[in-house]
Image (spheres, one colour):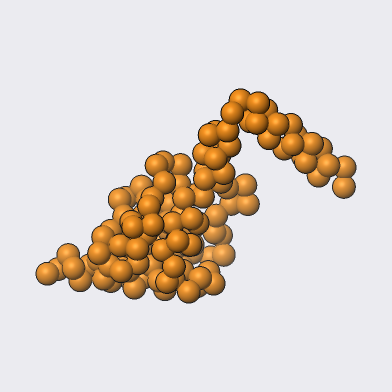
Length: 132
């Protein structure tokens, strides 16, 4: 019985944290997409995201840390609701240069010729940025 209550409490905190960043917290698709952009491991499924939002499952610790950093909350608060922990960090959310792991996986799935073209495009874009 306690684990059910813990999962439901986690889901409430997750939806609250999503709300604070301007997300209504109800879309497993959006949660999975945004999480997978930030998570370097195997992407989570829509089913897993739905379970998190509905209080049916808890994320593993590595996923919880990534999620907390993205949402700008303490991992302890997100998992346990520890009021002693700093509930929300100051506006220091994720860094500007955060790696988009979902994009990296998609580029990695391209053919060698297309990866080379993407690399050339990125190089040209970077050169254009420095000219401003």
